[in-house]
Image (cartoon, rainbow, N blue to C red; front, side, top):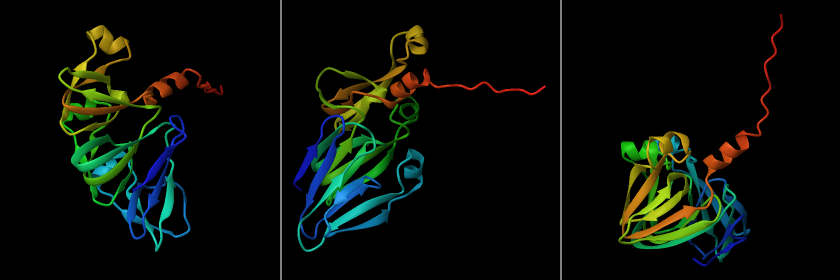
Length: 224
């Protein structure tokens, strides 16, 4: 499908032209505007795994009726939008990064190993997307594409958005015990193999930690 990603990289949104009779699938509540000939319906894609990831239990299906139509999609986080054209490959997304996909593409929630789920920063689950077609995903902040080749690539776990098949990662501590407990870095992901990793320039945990210093705490008053 023809598409445009506009207002990059801080406040990106996605415009997709849907040919007549074709379908587009979008994360629930992400549609910003659409043509009047577009029909939308909610599909129940819920399950125990999606419930645990915090994803919506529904997904929106958009169909162009009789003629081509357009759907504009605006993700929740302030950041960028990435695109990957699948031709039988697989890409893995963090549980909060999936945005939309075309027909011919399937996705499922993949359970991670125990150590990865606890320490990776991507959560217990990843979204596994495969097939032939287009998939779009969003980031918090700008999106950076990095190649994994012969040398391992180390990335802070809060910055991971997606990675392609052929890339695997291990969870390793950053430095010694002092770094682990006092530096704020903790554990990182060390990627190896051959493929691509997409990372975001900002991470929500850092924003929360920064904003928490300015939070007004009211002392409770006791009456004698």
